[in-house]
Length: 221
Length: 263
Image 1 (cartoon, each protein chain N blue to C red):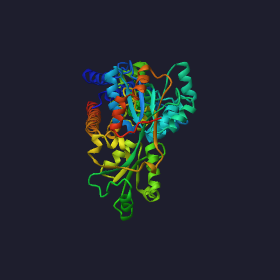
Image 2: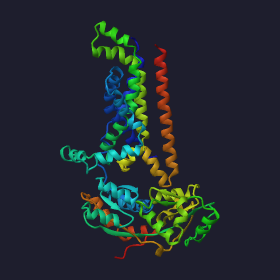
Image 3: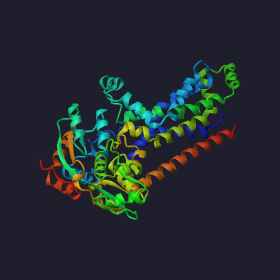
Image 4: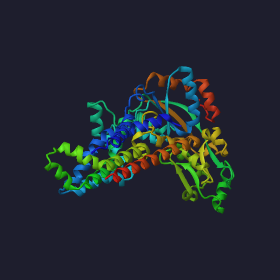
């Protein structure tokens, strides 16, 4: 069992959520409430990482963030930050490939809130923040929870993009999914077995938990 | 809205998710990184283990195809020592100004045919039985490393061409991303055999899975394996670079079937 890889994957999933959750809440809610010309294009862009082959995404990230690219050079020179083959690069990649996993459930959750409720809250004198906190969020929780769980589990399991921009460096970019691949190549099937089982149990457990919580929340309404 | 317990449960879930997010502990003092051709997987782990015990330094070993590492180093991958399975990649990096110097030969590699137990193929270094199996249909899948970017794959292709089998065997090839994956494919039970590195076949975990016979060295260009220090390599890696030339390290490499460079 490669504990270092497991811890790294947990860290990556956690950091991704910290960065992505505020953004996802804002963008998902905005898409749920707003109509504008070109909305279909924005929604398509949100879903794009889901339908694009991970190698395509990884390739573009490698080319656009690498040391030879303008962005990569700018980050290296002004921020002293390298964006490929290290943890920072993985976070950038992970945030991008998880956008649909967080925005879509959040958007559906806010769309499901009857407009009459938020209007009633406004009429009752609740401000925007108060409405969000006391009316919208309690109703949107199941969707937000499943967004969080999906993003977390998906980050734990992402392989193609991480392989392309990561380079499988222990403690830096070798996530648990990559470590399984490495163990198989090293003829260490026993370790691959254990890690694959752990990911299976973790994924099944997390998704079951989110369904269970959603059902409980829905039943109380 | 009196539902604090559940909300607290949700917040706790979120908090625990964020809790795992504090990086730092792992990245405090990263050990220097060695990017090594995957034919070195077992041999180099043993050499590095011995080096770490004797010197007290720590190293991170990453294994893959030499061609992939070449591309990654050009993209700015933070490796400190590059151990290629051939010398072309090292010279190309040196010409591009990405290395400290033109490096040092550290071993000569060999290829051979690996046939898993229970395969209808015989392990025959001159590939006569492979040719027969291609004709009579015993051979369904045959594994080699990807010749596009893996030196061991290129040598496998050259040897198969020399034997006059390349065109016939091409539709039956499964390509490993590197020679270690090719060996894994060859012994997985889904292929009848493959061309892999002697150094992998000598490892106990691989040797237990099948029989191995060397392919004549004259059938392919030599695998002149060269390593090179990359800019910014710390002292630990420089020491390891020199350690690889010591008798203790070379004895381990020879046990895995590597011939030592004379020049």
